[in-house]
Image (cartoon, rainbow, N blue to C red):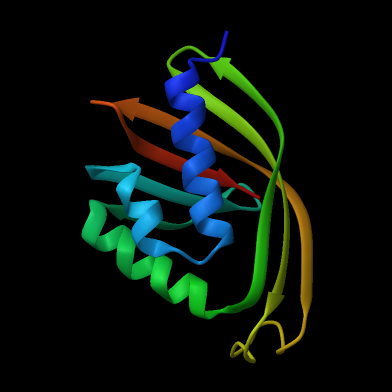
Length: 127
């Protein structure tokens, strides 16, 4: 059974993400939050602490003209809440050696959320 308080935290985090509300995302996180993004089975980026997370989140937000994460499913695995997410985003500006402005990205991935002290203390995104 999913803990309602944990589900509410994750939903608030995703809602803030979709609205480009970095401060709203930060409000759901512990000061020592660990963030990881894995793409193609490889660790692409990681941060430790709210300050590092904020820097990455602001850079990430600037990359997109629009972006939406939609929750497809949630399940509890031990102390972790695993969320299957459909992502849709449009790139805002050309990325060197990457997608061009206007490129649409649609994919399904998962995010694993850990919790401590009533906050999210770990986010592991896998695409």
